[in-house]
Image 1 (cartoon, helix red, strand yellow):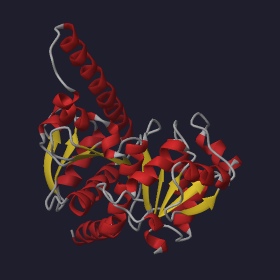
Image 2 (image 1 turned 120 degrees about the vertical axis):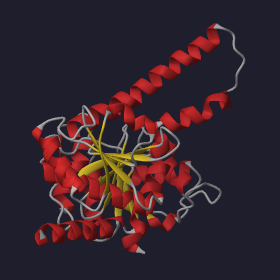
Image 3 (image 1 turned 30 degrees about the horizontal axis):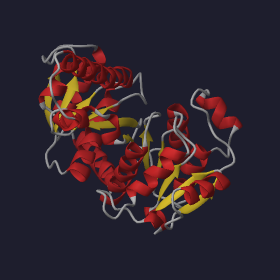
Image 4 (image 1 turned 180 degrees about the horizontal axis):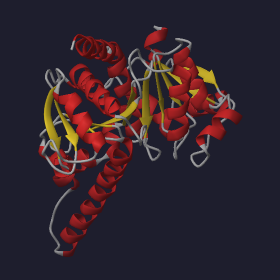
Length: 339
């Protein structure tokens, strides 16, 4: 059971420890959508705080607990924090995966510290040159995975190609897309568009066994043209944050107009729209390419987001996503060697 456990950073995030603890309970709810066995969750953080919280929320249903004496603050510099706080909840979570005490780790804490700890502590999968952060959204009712969302802001063409391979493996294993379409985010659809980086990445993707549909523009993300959208980490992070905040902005305008015109409506009227744009529904982002399942949660995560992040970690772990990424990269390497 140990290698199927999910280490949860209880001390990370804006609403810790309450949100992570409540999220753990929610993920284990037998009437919920995840229904994860409590024994699969390893709570990491100050043990006294965790036990006090468990008593407050109704008692321990069977979670594991791993003490961590330090916490990395949301505003701390990642490198400095990791060096000075080696017993932080983030480091201990990653350490649990490294020692096989868990197969996955989840944190809503300092993103830079978590990515750094996971990349350095776990290393990369065979064949992976640089990990990438993958976020899955259902803006059109159909899931689309975008990567990289911030791990690699200055990638090489081979990195972008590997993001296509890794994103495709994730979509097949966890979301049931047997032949996910891959698009390269660019300023135009023509193969000649964009920087040298994008043109070289285009050639690699076009020469692969992936279902590569070519370049797509930003607006195509909302048109269900591809299940996997590949981009560099700088662009991806800007796109993600813009989409999150713009969606909330537009929703606020709509609600204000409805109120102004005295339109009678109930919350359920816009529930589906709200669900599609709510970050808590997708829970977190996968750091694909590291030797372990790593889910990066939003700092603002509430209990619903935490529960969904735990569920995402469990799905990726149980589906063997990392094993399929390695197989996919081996296949592409063999093809390259044969040409």
